[in-house]
Image 1 (spheres, rainbow, N blue to C red):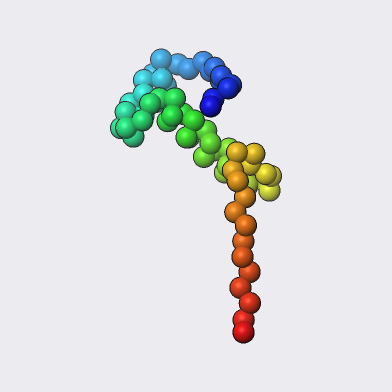
Image 2: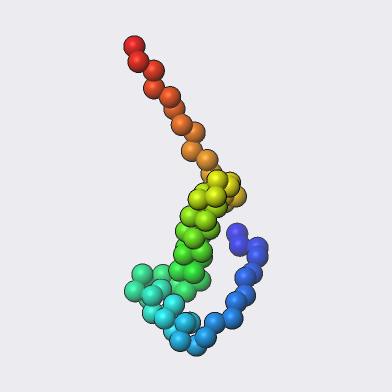
Length: 66
């Protein structure tokens, strides 16, 4: 369930381009923006060695020889 709202100001041509890109992807503008922001946040945070709060860690299994 979504509990927070993020508002941002855009130029009309930016919003139009985002709407077109979302339509091409076959998803809502909200889903398109959220997906792109999540990807950017993961890249930025992981790139600086920080934890990404909304990504569950994947436990790694070690392989032993023998």
